[in-house]
Amino acid sequence: MKYKDNSLVEELDAIILLNGNYETKGLYKGYIGTVMSNLIDLQGIVVADFSNPITGENIQPVVEVKKEDFRVISNSLSDQKLVKAFRDLFRK
Image 1 (spheres, rainbow, N blue to C red):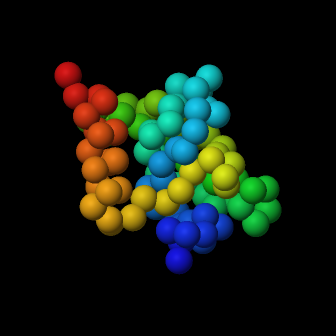
Image 2: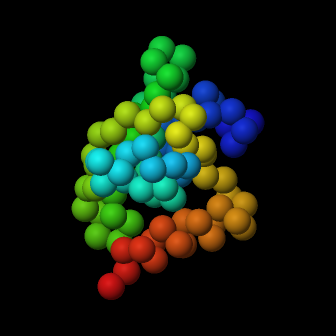
Image 3: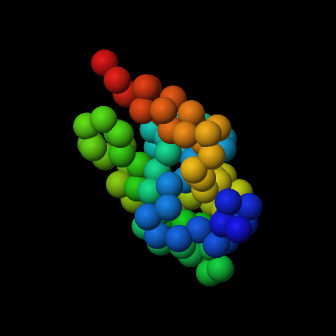
């Protein structure tokens, strides 16, 4: 269900940004992060960590992402392709 209802997202779930609302923070549409806290019921956000998938370096270690600006990554083939595309952005 969490793949259809963002309010059910859990800590350590991978999420993907659906828009460019966080570009000023160095986060672009398609970037994938890890949920640290689900505050959707209280504030309509999750707190997430976005790191370089190759080096592990922080891009944004703590960022608040609005419920409507992300979705949870599933194990589907199409989502795994998105994960690969994200990793490929950081390969040299």
